[in-house]
Length: 117
Image (tube, rainbow, N blue to C red; front, side):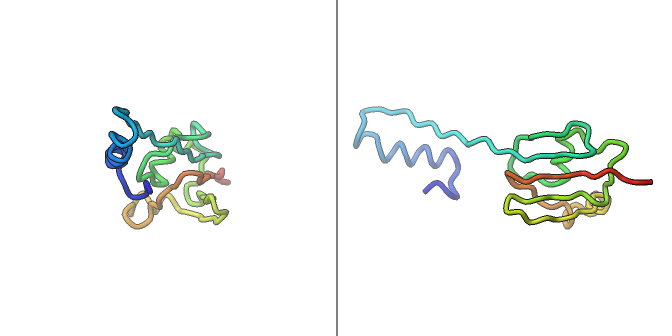
């Protein structure tokens, strides 16, 4: 089981399981699988973005080049991998990030709509 272990802990555990019981020497390298989320709509650089640990909505939008001048920051939609939808007011999240800047997970889709004057 790899859940809850760091890459170093998992490498050490695998090394201890197979060397020297099965192999005289065997270098063990564990690599994390690439994960992505998606940002679309009124941002400067929409598209697939690499997921980094502890990603939040505001950080995710910054990785997409931030909002463009036509973005509706008050109705940003997140569609989770399980299909659940959330609408977030990013203006309020900027003022109170510890409570309102929600986490983003691999596979999430963020849609920034256009504002209407």
